[in-house]
Length: 223
Image 1: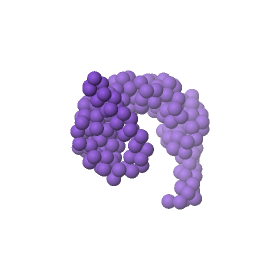
Image 2: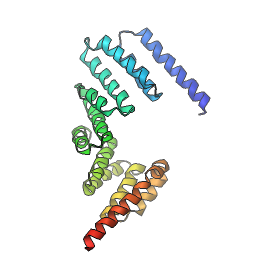
Image 3: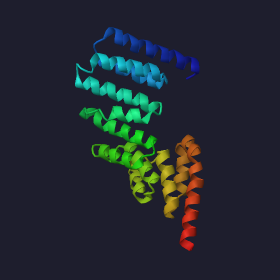
Image 4: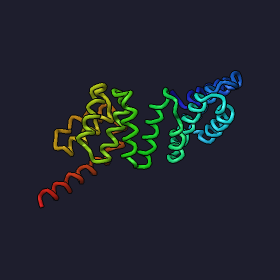
């Protein structure tokens, strides 16, 4: 799809979502839907203003509305890298249907702050109700690698690859883990490049970091 078509499609969607608010001014979901689309368009200030306005209108009328709109506001702050503000919003979400998603976003916000231990706590809580969710298992794997727990991380990437052997990110990270653990790794990297070349190219710098890590460890063992 060329840029002109994309632009036209975005304008049509935006017009429809604004019209939905005009037609249903007492439905908080129309505000949330528009804010989510504004985040996609990177119109973060507009999304924030819209959600603040909606919270003013609906927060005292319905707990569910307050939860959904607060979650939306957390997404705005997360998208612009304001992780502390995002955490404050996600912590207020108590709706059962949204809580697992809020835990995942809390975890990602803590990951943004490089607080992997805290992130892991929320991911493991979210995973209790979604054990086979590959997106959660990928994030758990990332946290465990960051914490240097490669053996445990391997188990979570195994779960991802069991449900989707073509996941480029899981293959790449499983390759890194195999390098550290002294196991065969070439096949994982081949698959990572085959199934997600963009991710493979972006993350290749990690290979030299792992090689340095292995070299330092070897030197320590040789002493």
